Length: 306
Image 1 (cartoon, rainbow, N blue to C red):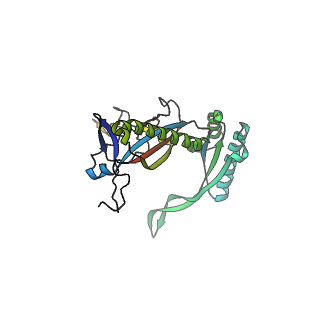
Image 2: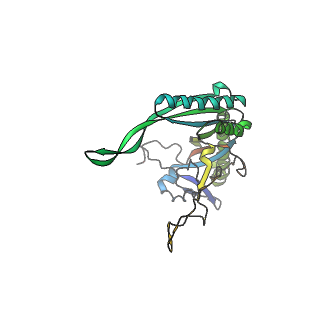
Image 3: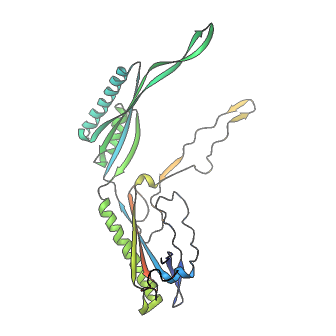
């Protein structure tokens, strides 16, 4: 079987020399501050003789159009009935408050999580000796409420109303959008145009009238949600001091929270979806690989060269 090793057209040296580099896997996730992939090593002569690869890439940004909040509710009591009554009251209070600011009843979905026993240690006398014995003293009920926010202008009001009217916690938050399908097609078209533009420049200049013909194509499309594009780090110089003593006084350092900010998509692509990442958006990234038969190899019969 014909052995084909991937290679990439990298640059034109002088008028007729083409430099080719081996293909590397693309980084399809947020770099989170990581470095770009290292430079590829030069391919062997057989790979260069087989085919040429040209890549194009493009990013399209899509603004969120909706959001989902997951609210947590926790109730404790000596039996399950007491827990259930307390949880019912809290959830009813929240749904009433959210309905008052425009959230539809069908956009609030209740989700039972668990009911678990609670234990405490009690001192008892066993066989004439005092001992601490763990006894069940009650129950804990955990439930969630999923809230679909269709109007992002009400998002802050929804969060405030939920927490002030009885929710124990805001467990999760995520954006959604209805424009991803169209964005995928737009990104693919832009990546293809970028790849064809490179091929026209590099192959035409390198080979002139002997320009290779296309033999195959490959594509990937990756959607980076806003949650994937945040970066969390410890600010320089704010690492907490170790616990210890200063003379006879115990030294207790202050808590230092991690720093988080929206970095946005920051990989190298041919066509950027915008300039600075000033707001949370979805980044739809398409990559296209065009493959061309190397001159003199387009009609090579598979299996004739080992």
